[in-house]
Length: 112
Length: 116
Image 1 (cartoon, each protein chain N blue to C red):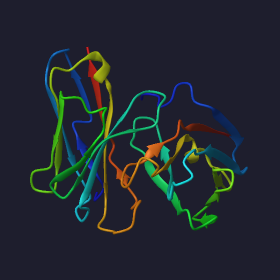
Image 2: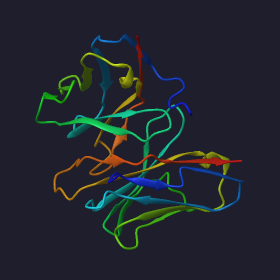
Image 3: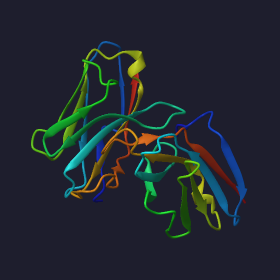
Image 4: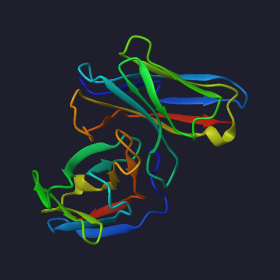
């Protein structure tokens, strides 16, 4: 299959370790943030989202942290598995209502 | 499968030809979006529909691009007189009827366009 993101930053982790993927945003007026996972040859898959009135939100094995002071967003994946290997994108609504603006993406490589 | 579907999955065409892609959103969603993604980049917004009304278009959407959603259900994206620079993954997403900004957008598998 094709590669998504040939020259993306890469995070390499061992299977079972926790992963932290970071994202910086620029617009302090952004109200909504979302993380997507994209596997090669597939469309982005929703992981978790958070609104600006929250600092933290947890899902199944994933946690999103939002630090509005420094305009930073992170995605934490607990007990990383080989199936978590993909490119991860953060996005926000800084482009306006209903228009997501995506970051550059980070490739997560999980090694056995 | 009740997710967003897109057809075709792959399209190879010669420069100057017209191509049309189709997107079928999640059935209860009234908002539909088109994005374009090139290798190494995140998706870029192209246009957005609420029901059958096209409410916003990006400057990326040149005059050669047109999108329709005639009955407020499926949508088509047509590119006329394709150029090599149009080669990309064209992604469709849909979201529900919520009134709050940022209703979750769910993406389809995309249509990979290659212009020779």
